[in-house]
Image (cartoon, rainbow, N blue to C red; front, side, top):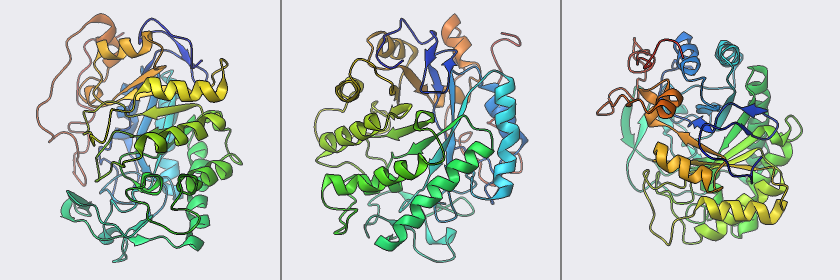
Length: 381
């Protein structure tokens, strides 16, 4: 499992209780805004994920766990019966193609807008506005971020339950497991980091308190899913959504230690700096994460590491062969190259797409455009 170094990206790997994966390349979660306004996925999602099922592991796009979690136009959800039913053909098709797929659980927190919530302010750990950029409001309109409402202490149990229910719904929909989105300045990251958590109750202040929400979510989730089917994503180096805390090393060391103690399937770390770097010290590395996990679990490491953000094939192989990572997640290269595993393995040139017009498509009458219409290098692999 986790600690044994492999030669390259193309060797098999065992992650948690997900079984043996065919290679060490994961599809990173990519928000593509192809669902309906109600967060329901469609046939184009079935095709999109099936096209990429040669990945060792597919991680779904970030998926809203509740109405309150919404903050991106036409992102999918997992909190209504219609949403759950719509995901079933996706997971069935991926499994028929020999793939494994996780659902990423998402609550945007302050990175939302009141237009999603009938005029009610988005929620966060504290009433602190994102300092730059704009919210993606309904209708794919950019609007100024608002000062969020700090969640009341008595609201926390309900929030935790939405993670539990979303996990149950993910299993009903046929997903192999779930990944908790605790990165990129979304709600759980807002509670974890000192920059955005100025609370004075049991969920703020000390590092132990800032970890409390995640700790309690894991405790409750464990009642409905084995934690060796659960991953988590962190962005210790990131600035996206106005993040970056002076105590980032201490914070993410403690967070990864918690995940190791809970024996999660994997920790998915955005260690690369392609998404921006806060420059508050030296970058947090995969090796640091590996050492933390080993310190907790000893030589029998059961929590794997997935590296992410700006990796090339060569850098990915390097991270694998050094033993720092068990898998590497690739995002944007997979958009125009559904057969990315084949292209990497056979040294086939990648299809390059300039600009971002193909990336998001909220509300488009042709959601498959720029989504499922990229060709594989060969028809049969």
